[in-house]
Image 1: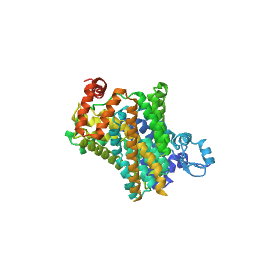
Image 2: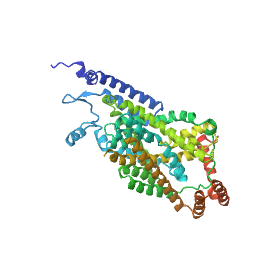
Image 3: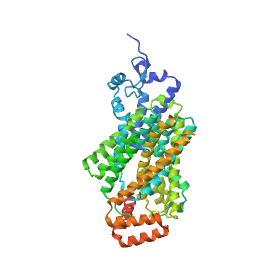
Image 4: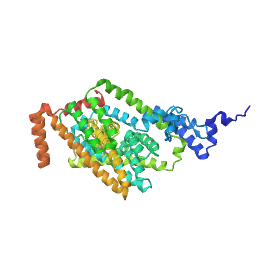
Amino acid sequence: MEKIDFGTLFPGIGTLFTGGIDVLLARFALIALGLFLVYLGKKKILEPLLMIPMGLGMATINAAVMVLPGGKQGNLFVDPLATDTNELFNILQIDWLQPIYTFTFSNGLIACCIFMGIGVLLDVGYMLRRPFLSIFLALFAEMGTFLVVPIASAMGMSLNDSASIAMVGGADGPMVLFTSMILSKDLFVPITIVAYLYLGFTYGGYPYLIKLLVPKHIRGIQPPKPKNLHPISSSQKLLFAVVMCVILCLLFPVAAPLFFSLFLGVAVREADIAPVVDFIKGPLLYGSTFFLGLLLGILCEAHLILNPKILPLLLLGILALLLSGIGGLLGGYIVYWWTGGKFNPVIGIAGVSCVPSTAKVAQKAVSEVNPKSIILQDALGANISGVITTAIITGLYVTLIPYFLK
Amino acid sequence: MNASYFVLVAALLAFATGFFVAAIIWGIKLALAPKAVRESSKSVHLLHIFSKHEMNHSFHFQADEKKTGQLNISSVINDELYQYYHGKN
């Protein structure tokens, strides 16, 4: 009888000691991080719908390492690096998550499904009430998306990678995934994970940023009720979705799947096709978000954090969100000065397009000082505009970068 | 240098596209608004462009006084939102 040693009997443990000390430490670190994310999800400190599958996936994939035929270490979940058609066809029949990765993740379908869900949830009427104000604030709240590109580039990153990590400043997970999959195929997993982890920063960190940059007496300003506002009809919203979709796709065909998904969601909502609305905002949105979290966790193998580019990504991601928050408040201050002190600059931070978190954060910060001051309408307008400006910037980055690399 | 130039171009184009989008939204609003509101809005926006801020302000009030039922719905919405956010108490 052939002798079976402990490492062969329990390959998950055996492979810990055959890959080198750095892989050993990285695997333990990622298992611990995965379990911590599950804890944060359970405590609702971070979004449980994403964190539970992501954390458990991260911990599992670093535990379930085995020796595959041919002596190579791997797992039975997914092989993201398989590109050869024959090899991929074999893997599709072995790795159980490979079909979902290949047919929904690596082609951006999952990001588009989430975007469609966001479209169904958006009431664009808030944006349509005061379009110039909303877009102005949203553009200023993209400061991190712009400024982090030269900063990352100065730190030695390529223009593609710089633009991808800068998109974290837009605070829109599917958009970061879409951009980085097109521009930085090697780094799209860590960049997207950084984006999703840091989105919690908008809840946790932005209230402090508001308190730091907006004095109490300004924070409590009750904006005057606009005089010439009238209800926005569903026909106006539907026409807006249709016209915007066609124009933006005409301008940025590379980002057309994103624009189409978003505006299709808006159009379905405004056309009041109830069964489809229920399907998109229920099973499709929640299912896509769940599998996005699961696949991101599963893709977090130990070799990932051994990449020397990870630490700069962590720093640049948080910097991008911080600068976007500051930019939003700066935009708010410009309107505050323009209107002679009648506008509440806190609304500006809602231009960071983490719908509806930043709008809620803005309202909460204002309510703490003046409970009668209601800024939620303007904040939601800026918030929804933020989704559209982030999509525009995605289109610009993906379209422009090839010309700058020539 | 290359990255800074890229960002400058991207930012300028983003602002231009953003305001283009806002202008289209304004056009859609105007095109589908009820006739009375449309005329009022046109006048208000013309005043925004050609006259001083104080004049706009006074015109707003005149326009509102004529069509209070149609134009001043924001107070209702604010109360509803207040209740939504803080509860009935």
